[in-house]
Length: 408
Image 1 (spheres, rainbow, N blue to C red):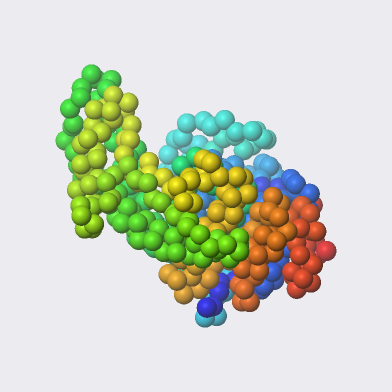
Image 2: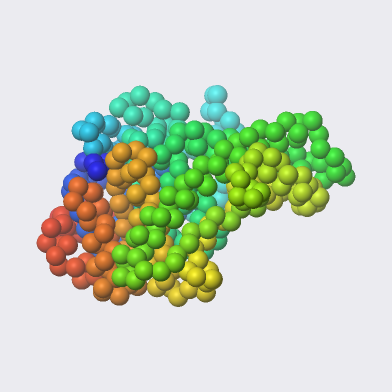
């Protein structure tokens, strides 16, 4: 299978990179350096460019580097030259800027608390995304760039909160299905509107649905059912690919189940495919008393979870740290396989020091699987000795220090 490659990456005022141009190798690139020097930031920039959001920041404005404070309008820019497997070339650009509040035609925003220079504490965040110089509606055009990332957040995925696991499966779907991306944005907006209406009703002492709320719920049910259907189909593929990767990593066959645990009845009756719209409508109706009292929407795709079970053991709860990390890495590989199947091109693999807590044999198995000829892989590490010598001999080696990248 062919693969997507990033041939050039340019960062301006992104995290601790004031200005940096970088050309990854077509195959394996190793980025070595002490912690806090910018290795993770570089991988994060590619993830943002591919998905439209960060995997580690609570708000987009966090990625605007402190060096931007000297600009008249503080901004951060990520740009990349990307080549698809068929040779098709794209120039992708994402700019995030802090426009002055009250600027003509711009909404007024509530002041946010931000650590850093005073020049970055105000302003309304604006995002602009271009492909080959043409502005796009969203910062995640399906097929232009696709990545999978295994970093500290990802390898602790199954031990962490459900929101992290939902974000992981959403990031895969967003890169392969434009309809999913649109419906996810719409669904999130509808949940926010419903919650606001619930708060308003509670303040008025009412437990009755308003006409606006009924309309929002109808739209929420349609959008939520689409998300559920897509996730269920995707999990079926991820389950098979994850089991194969896990077997390769551990050298042992065994039962490993990836379970989608929904707040909605998705099992159907007698094995028949459920009517997801009706299931979601029933779930909302059943939760009305609770939702009315708490002014929150307690059921739906935004409250679902993803768990991994070995036998009868939930690895996220009872598994060792090594088991949890191996399962999470297997999921990343499964996500890569799924994206490749959907796009026809394998994604760029980003490995952010995920090997430090694995034994030598398992590290070698993981890397051997990732380093398939033709794939582009970027690996960060604080200890190059963790990367097998054979891998290093075929890799482009770089050091990262204080937001600067230099050939090793």
